[in-house]
Image 1 (cartoon, rainbow, N blue to C red):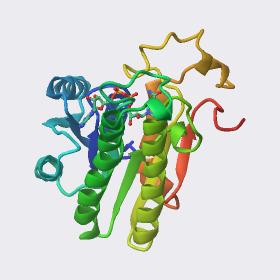
Image 2: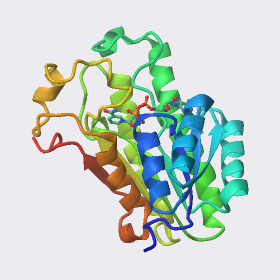
Image 3: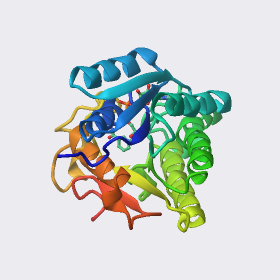
Length: 254
Ligand SMILES: NC(=O)c1ccc[n+]([C@@H]2O[C@H](COP(=O)([O-])OP(=O)(O)OC[C@H]3O[C@@H](n4cnc5c(N)ncnc54)[C@H](O)[C@@H]3O)[C@@H](O)[C@H]2O)c1
C-alpha cells in the first residue's frame, strides 16, 4: 500500500528536534523524501539517521532561517536531493529571545528579545515561504504548512514577542493562501497547544499553571502533532487553504 506522501519531495525546517523531527519521521513513513533542515546540523543529522535506519529517505541541511542566502541554498539543496519541492513545513521557531525571562511584561521586554523572536518566528517563515512559493509556482502545485501556535490565535501574557510573531504567521499564511488559491498551491498554519518538546521541557509539567488551561489536562505529544502535519501536507487536504489548524487538547475552545 502506498503512503500519503509517496515520492513527494518534502522540506521540514527545525527538524533537528521536537515537532519538526517527529513530523520529518512521519513524512518519511508515509513515503516522502525529506530534507531535514536545522540551525543545528548535528540534530538534523540525528533525525536523518533515525529516518534512514527505519528505511526512509532523508538528507540533512544546515540553515539559519533568518538568513536569506542560506534559505535560498536550503531549497536548492532540497531540490537537488529529491527534485522540485512538493511540500514544505516551515516549523523552525524559538520561544524567547536571548535575554527574555518567561513572564516578562511588555513594558519590560527588551528590543533585543523582541527582534530575536520576530527574526526566527516571522522573518524566518517569510523567507522560507517566499522561496518555496517561487519554486512551486513554476509547476502550479504544492502544499505549505507554517508553524504558528495557539499563541497565534489567543494572547499569551508574559510572552508578547512570541504571541505577536505567531499571530503574524497566521496573517502571512492567510494573505499568501489567498494569492495562490487558484494556482494549486495550498498554504495553511499549524497551531499546536502545549506539546512536550525540548522547548517546553524547562516547565514542570503536571503542576504548572499552563496545565489548568488545557481541557484535556495534559501536554500533547509530538506524534499527535505529526499526524495533522502529514494530513495537511497530503492531497487528502486538497480543499484546505488559508486556515489555521489547532492541535491543543481543547485549549482554544474555552
Ligand atoms: N512545544 C510547544 O508546546 C509548541 C507549541 C506551539 C507552537 N510550537 C512551535 O513549534 C515549532 C517547533 O517547536 P518545538 O517545540 O519542536 O521546539 P524545539 O526547540 O524542539 O525545535 C525547534 C527547532 O528549531 C531549530 N531552530 C531554531 N532557530 C532556528 C533557525 N534560526 N534556523 C533554523 N532552525 C532553527 C532548533 O535548532 C530546533 O531544532 C516552533 O515554531 C514553536 O514555536 C511549539
